Amino acid sequence: MAGLAFDPGSNPDVGLLHDINGLARSAPAWFDRVMEFVGEYGIMLALVLVALWCWWSVRRRGTEEESVSALAALVWAPLAAGVALLVNIPIRGFVERPRPFRDHEGLEVLVDGKTDFSFVSDHATMAMALGVGLFVAHRRFGLAAIALALAEGFCRVYMGVHYPTDVIGGFALGTAVTLLFAPLALGLLTPLVSAVARSGRAGWLVRSRRAAADDRDPERDWEPQPHETLDLAEPRQEAGPGEKGLAA
Image (cartoon, rainbow, N blue to C red; front, side, top):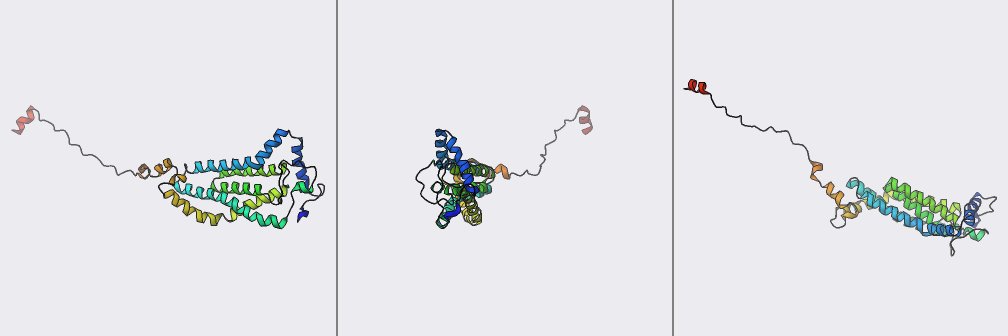
Protein backbone atom coordinates (compact mmCIF):
# COMPACT_ATOMS: atom_id res chain seq x y z
CA MET A 1 0.00 0.00 0.00
CA ALA A 2 3.01 2.28 0.19
CA GLY A 3 2.70 2.70 -3.58
CA LEU A 4 0.12 5.44 -3.11
CA ALA A 5 2.94 7.93 -3.69
CA PHE A 6 4.37 8.35 -7.20
CA ASP A 7 6.38 10.95 -9.05
CA PRO A 8 4.99 14.49 -9.03
CA GLY A 9 4.49 14.41 -12.79
CA SER A 10 2.26 11.32 -12.73
CA ASN A 11 0.49 11.79 -9.41
CA PRO A 12 -1.55 14.96 -8.76
CA ASP A 13 -1.44 14.18 -5.04
CA VAL A 14 2.35 14.47 -5.00
CA GLY A 15 2.29 17.48 -7.28
CA LEU A 16 -0.10 19.32 -4.97
CA LEU A 17 2.06 18.34 -2.02
CA HIS A 18 5.08 20.01 -3.61
CA ASP A 19 3.05 23.08 -4.57
CA ILE A 20 1.74 23.66 -1.05
CA ASN A 21 4.90 22.67 0.76
CA GLY A 22 6.91 24.81 -1.64
CA LEU A 23 5.33 27.84 0.02
CA ALA A 24 7.28 26.96 3.17
CA ARG A 25 10.60 27.13 1.33
CA SER A 26 9.97 30.67 0.15
CA ALA A 27 8.39 31.93 3.40
CA PRO A 28 10.39 33.65 6.17
CA ALA A 29 11.68 31.44 8.95
CA TRP A 30 9.46 33.12 11.54
CA PHE A 31 6.37 32.41 9.45
CA ASP A 32 7.27 28.72 9.23
CA ARG A 33 7.60 28.63 13.02
CA VAL A 34 4.15 30.17 13.33
CA MET A 35 2.70 27.64 10.90
CA GLU A 36 4.40 24.83 12.80
CA PHE A 37 2.74 25.90 16.05
CA VAL A 38 -0.62 26.59 14.41
CA GLY A 39 -0.69 23.27 12.58
CA GLU A 40 0.48 21.20 15.52
CA TYR A 41 -1.31 22.87 18.46
CA GLY A 42 -2.87 26.26 17.63
CA ILE A 43 -5.88 25.20 15.58
CA MET A 44 -6.76 22.40 17.97
CA LEU A 45 -6.67 24.92 20.81
CA ALA A 46 -8.87 27.27 18.77
CA LEU A 47 -11.38 24.46 18.26
CA VAL A 48 -11.54 23.93 22.01
CA LEU A 49 -12.19 27.65 22.51
CA VAL A 50 -14.96 27.60 19.89
CA ALA A 51 -16.53 24.63 21.67
CA LEU A 52 -16.41 26.49 24.99
CA TRP A 53 -17.93 29.59 23.39
CA CYS A 54 -20.67 27.42 21.90
CA TRP A 55 -21.38 25.90 25.33
CA TRP A 56 -21.53 29.34 26.94
CA SER A 57 -23.96 30.55 24.28
CA VAL A 58 -26.41 27.65 24.05
CA ARG A 59 -26.91 27.46 27.81
CA ARG A 60 -28.01 31.09 27.93
CA ARG A 61 -30.38 31.26 24.94
CA GLY A 62 -33.44 29.45 23.68
CA THR A 63 -35.64 27.05 25.58
CA GLU A 64 -34.48 24.42 28.02
CA GLU A 65 -35.20 21.70 25.46
CA GLU A 66 -33.01 23.46 22.91
CA SER A 67 -30.19 23.81 25.44
CA VAL A 68 -30.37 20.11 26.31
CA SER A 69 -30.27 19.06 22.64
CA ALA A 70 -27.37 21.38 21.83
CA LEU A 71 -25.36 20.33 24.87
CA ALA A 72 -25.85 16.65 24.06
CA ALA A 73 -24.45 17.26 20.56
CA LEU A 74 -21.65 19.34 22.03
CA VAL A 75 -20.65 16.51 24.36
CA TRP A 76 -20.73 14.11 21.41
CA ALA A 77 -18.26 16.22 19.39
CA PRO A 78 -15.08 15.36 21.37
CA LEU A 79 -16.30 11.80 21.89
CA ALA A 80 -16.71 11.46 18.12
CA ALA A 81 -13.16 12.74 17.63
CA GLY A 82 -11.89 10.07 20.02
CA VAL A 83 -13.87 7.32 18.28
CA ALA A 84 -12.58 8.47 14.88
CA LEU A 85 -8.98 8.29 16.11
CA LEU A 86 -9.58 4.73 17.31
CA VAL A 87 -11.06 3.78 13.93
CA ASN A 88 -7.99 5.26 12.24
CA ILE A 89 -5.61 2.88 14.04
CA PRO A 90 -6.45 -0.21 11.93
CA ILE A 91 -6.74 1.94 8.78
CA ARG A 92 -3.18 3.18 9.21
CA GLY A 93 -1.94 -0.33 9.89
CA PHE A 94 -3.63 -1.67 6.77
CA VAL A 95 -2.57 1.08 4.35
CA GLU A 96 0.98 1.53 5.77
CA ARG A 97 1.66 4.66 3.79
CA PRO A 98 5.01 6.28 4.73
CA ARG A 99 5.28 9.96 5.49
CA PRO A 100 5.83 12.01 2.31
CA PHE A 101 9.31 13.18 3.34
CA ARG A 102 10.46 9.55 3.39
CA ASP A 103 9.67 9.00 -0.28
CA HIS A 104 10.25 12.47 -1.71
CA GLU A 105 13.36 14.60 -1.38
CA GLY A 106 13.34 18.36 -1.30
CA LEU A 107 10.38 18.80 1.03
CA GLU A 108 10.53 21.45 3.74
CA VAL A 109 9.63 19.46 6.87
CA LEU A 110 8.68 21.74 9.75
CA VAL A 111 8.13 19.03 12.37
CA ASP A 112 10.70 16.38 13.20
CA GLY A 113 10.14 13.00 14.80
CA LYS A 114 7.16 11.81 12.73
CA THR A 115 7.86 8.09 12.38
CA ASP A 116 4.34 6.64 12.11
CA PHE A 117 2.32 6.13 8.95
CA SER A 118 0.73 8.96 7.01
CA PHE A 119 -2.74 7.84 5.89
CA VAL A 120 -5.03 9.12 7.27
CA SER A 121 -4.11 12.32 9.12
CA ASP A 122 -5.00 12.18 12.82
CA HIS A 123 -5.09 15.97 13.08
CA ALA A 124 -7.44 16.31 10.10
CA THR A 125 -9.64 13.51 11.40
CA MET A 126 -9.94 14.99 14.87
CA ALA A 127 -10.44 18.56 13.67
CA MET A 128 -13.23 17.67 11.24
CA ALA A 129 -14.96 15.41 13.77
CA LEU A 130 -15.05 18.33 16.19
CA GLY A 131 -16.22 20.70 13.47
CA VAL A 132 -19.08 18.49 12.31
CA GLY A 133 -20.06 17.74 15.90
CA LEU A 134 -20.23 21.46 16.65
CA PHE A 135 -22.30 21.96 13.50
CA VAL A 136 -24.83 19.47 14.83
CA ALA A 137 -24.96 21.44 18.08
CA HIS A 138 -25.04 24.95 16.57
CA ARG A 139 -24.72 25.85 12.90
CA ARG A 140 -22.92 29.17 13.30
CA PHE A 141 -20.27 27.81 15.62
CA GLY A 142 -20.08 24.63 13.55
CA LEU A 143 -19.27 26.54 10.37
CA ALA A 144 -16.47 28.36 12.18
CA ALA A 145 -15.11 25.05 13.47
CA ILE A 146 -15.28 23.42 10.03
CA ALA A 147 -13.34 26.37 8.60
CA LEU A 148 -10.68 25.78 11.26
CA ALA A 149 -10.58 22.10 10.34
CA LEU A 150 -9.97 22.97 6.69
CA ALA A 151 -7.14 25.28 7.78
CA GLU A 152 -5.70 22.42 9.83
CA GLY A 153 -5.60 20.22 6.76
CA PHE A 154 -3.76 22.88 4.78
CA CYS A 155 -1.23 23.30 7.57
CA ARG A 156 -0.46 19.57 7.67
CA VAL A 157 0.45 19.59 3.97
CA TYR A 158 2.32 22.90 4.31
CA MET A 159 4.41 21.36 7.09
CA GLY A 160 5.43 18.47 4.84
CA VAL A 161 4.08 15.72 7.09
CA HIS A 162 1.03 14.64 5.05
CA TYR A 163 -0.14 14.20 1.48
CA PRO A 164 -3.31 16.06 0.48
CA THR A 165 -5.15 12.73 0.24
CA ASP A 166 -4.15 11.99 3.85
CA VAL A 167 -5.98 15.14 4.84
CA ILE A 168 -9.01 14.45 2.63
CA GLY A 169 -9.21 10.94 4.07
CA GLY A 170 -9.11 12.41 7.57
CA PHE A 171 -11.91 14.82 6.74
CA ALA A 172 -14.03 11.97 5.37
CA LEU A 173 -13.33 9.72 8.37
CA GLY A 174 -14.10 12.40 10.94
CA THR A 175 -17.33 13.38 9.19
CA ALA A 176 -18.50 9.79 8.70
CA VAL A 177 -17.90 8.73 12.30
CA THR A 178 -19.58 11.85 13.71
CA LEU A 179 -22.71 11.59 11.57
CA LEU A 180 -23.12 7.81 11.47
CA PHE A 181 -22.94 7.36 15.22
CA ALA A 182 -24.76 10.61 16.06
CA PRO A 183 -28.28 9.11 16.36
CA LEU A 184 -27.13 6.46 18.82
CA ALA A 185 -24.88 8.83 20.75
CA LEU A 186 -27.51 11.57 21.04
CA GLY A 187 -30.13 9.01 22.03
CA LEU A 188 -27.91 8.07 24.99
CA LEU A 189 -26.58 11.51 25.85
CA THR A 190 -29.80 13.53 25.68
CA PRO A 191 -31.47 11.86 28.71
CA LEU A 192 -28.21 12.20 30.64
CA VAL A 193 -27.88 15.89 29.85
CA SER A 194 -31.56 16.39 30.67
CA ALA A 195 -31.02 14.79 34.08
CA VAL A 196 -28.07 17.10 34.71
CA ALA A 197 -30.22 20.09 33.73
CA ARG A 198 -32.80 19.13 36.36
CA SER A 199 -30.25 18.65 39.12
CA GLY A 200 -29.80 21.43 41.62
CA ARG A 201 -26.02 21.63 41.75
CA ALA A 202 -24.95 20.81 38.20
CA GLY A 203 -27.89 22.30 36.32
CA TRP A 204 -25.92 25.45 35.48
CA LEU A 205 -23.74 23.36 33.18
CA VAL A 206 -26.71 22.93 30.85
CA ARG A 207 -28.79 26.00 31.61
CA SER A 208 -27.52 29.26 33.04
CA ARG A 209 -29.10 30.36 36.30
CA ARG A 210 -30.60 33.43 34.68
CA ALA A 211 -32.14 31.40 31.85
CA ALA A 212 -33.44 28.85 34.33
CA ALA A 213 -35.01 31.67 36.37
CA ASP A 214 -36.69 32.99 33.22
CA ASP A 215 -38.08 29.50 32.58
CA ARG A 216 -39.66 29.55 36.02
CA ASP A 217 -40.94 33.14 35.69
CA PRO A 218 -44.68 33.03 36.46
CA GLU A 219 -45.26 35.93 34.06
CA ARG A 220 -44.60 33.53 31.18
CA ASP A 221 -47.63 31.44 32.18
CA TRP A 222 -49.81 34.45 33.14
CA GLU A 223 -53.17 34.51 31.46
CA PRO A 224 -55.45 37.54 31.60
CA GLN A 225 -58.46 37.05 33.87
CA PRO A 226 -62.01 37.82 32.65
CA HIS A 227 -62.78 41.51 33.00
CA GLU A 228 -64.77 42.20 36.17
CA THR A 229 -66.73 45.39 36.64
CA LEU A 230 -66.70 47.07 40.00
CA ASP A 231 -70.15 48.03 41.40
CA LEU A 232 -69.86 51.55 42.74
CA ALA A 233 -72.63 52.96 45.00
CA GLU A 234 -74.41 55.81 43.33
CA PRO A 235 -74.12 59.08 45.24
CA ARG A 236 -77.17 59.83 47.41
CA GLN A 237 -79.00 62.93 46.26
CA GLU A 238 -80.53 65.13 48.96
CA ALA A 239 -84.06 66.41 48.33
CA GLY A 240 -84.58 70.12 47.80
CA PRO A 241 -87.01 72.37 49.79
CA GLY A 242 -89.90 71.72 47.43
CA GLU A 243 -89.35 68.01 47.48
CA LYS A 244 -89.49 67.98 51.27
CA GLY A 245 -92.94 69.57 51.17
CA LEU A 246 -94.25 67.07 48.74
CA ALA A 247 -92.90 64.28 50.82
CA ALA A 248 -94.69 65.57 53.85
